[in-house]
Image (cartoon, rainbow over the protein chains, first blue to last red):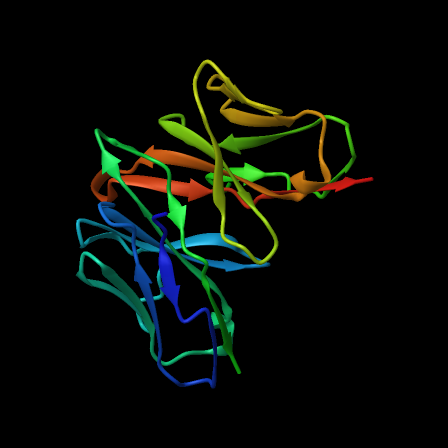
Length: 116
Length: 113
């Protein structure tokens, strides 16, 4: 049963610390998305990659957030330095984009981040 | 105006009743549409795609109205287990950024005995 995995599932850290979240997309999917979800803002797209290349990271605060895909099996989202307002659930999702359309987008279980 | 908008609810629904809600989108060039379901403290999961001709999956019916730029979801014979947040997703070809999937804020449905 193929699924997207994310680590860690929970992270509590102090303001100013670096946070790295990892995602393993479903094998064969060529598009990876990073979302942030809060009660106030809902689900926000931070960035997404196609074939490991960043396509759009306009939703991401550039000064402290960075997203990379070092290889096809790993996507990372890093926050440095972290701030209390970054507290949220961060979801990774993957999908297969083909013939100008997506198939189903599969979400990982999320990383619940709390910055004190 | 947000690209994809939903009534946040909650829609309080008696068990066995029918509930319907819409999702409006601002860009007429939007190409494909989906409904996702999200349970509390869980990840969103695909409920159904929305086709131009409308489609049905058991108790769930999705419709697309391109002229008025909205999609709808109807749930018949509501079950307690249908309580969740329903997110609509719109796929828009977005220039250099390629195809972009945009989520609405979600509609919360509470089915009560």
